[in-house]
Image (cartoon, rainbow, N blue to C red; front, side, top):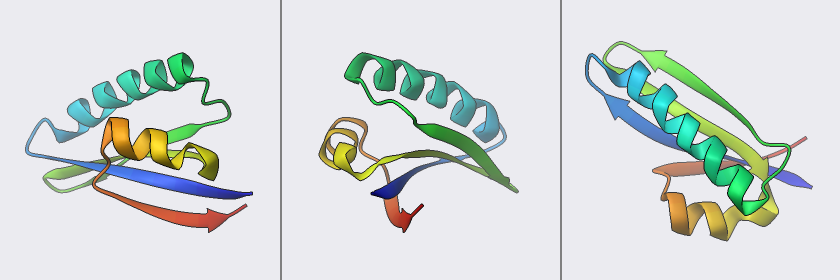
Length: 77
């Protein structure tokens, strides 16, 4: 099955901390909605941090509609 990677961008001097805190809420959301086997990470560039969530493609509508990521990509495991 394909995996989706959703991305949320945060800007400014506190971007990394904000992205890490956001992912705590993403973990809670995944637990509440039964999204298992997910992974997440924070990627950092100067003045910007991107929080990413990897999960099965079957959760597309749920994550897209409720968490409203800025962009997503599909990849095969």
